[in-house]
Image (cartoon, rainbow over all chains, first blue to last red):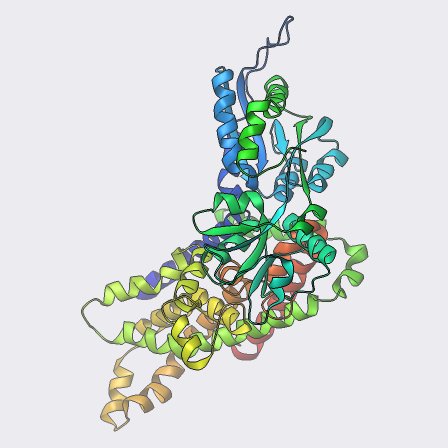
Length: 282
Length: 249
């Protein structure tokens, strides 16, 4: 009997371990995994009839896939959009741009894609999944994130090479790491980080936790964490600007609402929401 | 029938990897720099982590199985915490203890000049934390299944507690310890969340295979598949070899 129980326990353990691995991935993808399931369920919106003639009124369900760095701004924008279009119900799934692009090319049913880098947008354009040409709606640039009050007195990139200073960068494979590399090269600064993080939020959290003295992150991320970190601007960041393109997807279940949303994001009050978060106009 | 479905469920994703693998470019991808370093780091850290788990976990399992003390159920539940905790949270928890502002980390740094985050030792720590429950639970199960009267007999014949454990108990539970060690090693080898959170990611120092796979996935799915297959082949190969050598029964 005891052996049977032990066997059952072992099976249960293995099952739990599997779940642990899953949560790994969703966490590190910037929280995208948790909402991924909702994407499938929230599509198939009722668009029929809207095209019958006259002005197409947006209605039904709208699914937006957006880069994790847009989380705060797009939550606000989708609220505004639903106020302006009460017939539409917006669901946004946030995640790393590259994994979202991969979901789209694998057939995820969604209407709009807002990417944190042109490269990931190009992936879906090349796969024939975009409808029309993507439009750049904002841009983002890097700042040096330091603990609140800047205890090490960092004023520019060259300060990051001070002995004993621990710096976290993003890995080159992700957009913030590629931008960091460009900026450091532009400044002629050679720097050995203690870690190459898998996304910008992970690099930022190392600063928040006090494990590193500085990190290169997007200005929007530093501003969203303003209670724990300060963002130090540096001139070389102008060499490494990240454009954010947005596009309606070709297989959008609700193309009318999708086009309306993409246009809405680029109206003046909503651009202001984005610039308040630290983005810049393109 | 359910057994076949269960097997298919486990094997089909693997088949997916094999079918999708870029076989034509495989040799050049495998010789890319950094891959061998990541593989070696993975194998070394997983093995050390397993050794740490054995040293700490077997005595813990013995206490849980053979002694009775108030709060034993609670301790047992606590042992399984790393299984339930999302590994990323486990990594943050480790930072809060061993980080440079952590409970012990500040003291370790000030007293011995030891700083664990972002080091290879940090990788071992993260892996051991996540993998140890597998060892403790299976050794405890083996101990409960073993007849404690053998130990008592050894004691009546004049064996000390340690001798009885070493000469009688350990051989009795060897299969359980081995199975636990294998589970523990496999879990440590695949560890991702706690490692990247606690030890960070730096090639050659803390970038293990799962971390390399994750980052490759950001850029090139084929490269990630190749890395995963390599890790699978090596680990399955090692486990099969171990099985032939020690568990011939």
